[in-house]
Image (cartoon, rainbow, N blue to C red; front, top):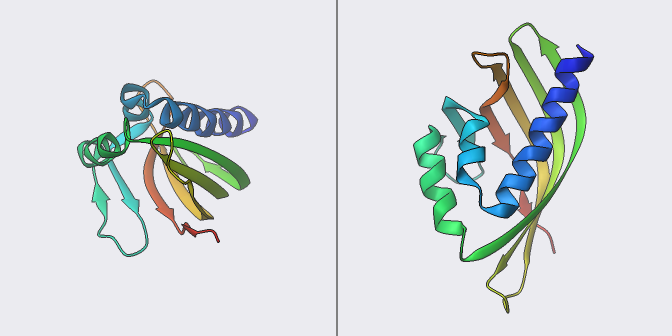
Length: 130
């Protein structure tokens, strides 16, 4: 279990690095093909292609920074979940004012062929910080 927990922590760190770098290829490799993202006020974002399309609208126009404080990880066989407190700062262009969002997330992971964990479902409750 400890190896799986560390692998999940590494996945979260890799996700944050890839997001900040605009590295779509790495982000894609960290997701299950059938991933679903749930966010407040939006319909479910279904599949890698939908995520990539939305992410590409942000990269190049905004700088992204994030921190994640994992509060719990549970692993059972080829399935795992974790919940965390996530902070994301989005800064438009070089001169724009940053927007900070924060809140809890609940992420379900599924082991991929080869044994690597992949994001399967992600629900986040991020709200704008004042």
